[in-house]
Length: 163
Image (cartoon, rainbow, N blue to C red; front, side, top):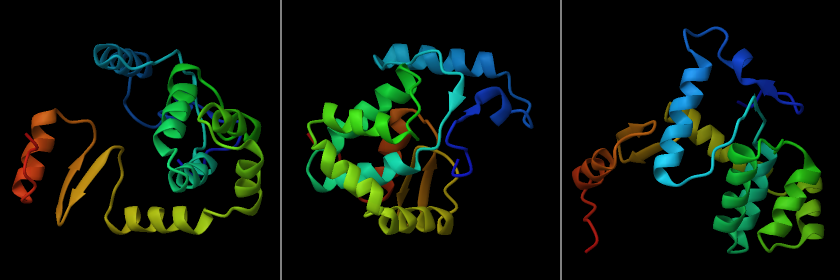
């Protein structure tokens, strides 16, 4: 949600125009996360992830993408931290084993802005509206789906299962 203000937006407000029981939805997400062994806390707000995406591409360029993305995931979904805030992102950078000062420079100069803009443009072109979305050629798998659906998508596109 690129229009989310830096201070965040209440999840109840985000879904106010939809026939959604937010408490029930969050309960289902919490249960699913628990079943998968993933951390999931009592989030009340959603935050703008734009700067974390830019920093994530930088972390990937330093071979620390997984560590950074995992730190952001935990901070956002388990701890309810505001990942739009630069100090929060810099702390997460350090926890992923990346240099804080370099991360601050990446954010200040918006060094990966164009790359994230390109990712967003591609998503718009391909009408991607949900996370996750898997795209192979002209086929798409949108939203959280059972593993067998992903296997079918891959098989239909000539990707063989590893042994």
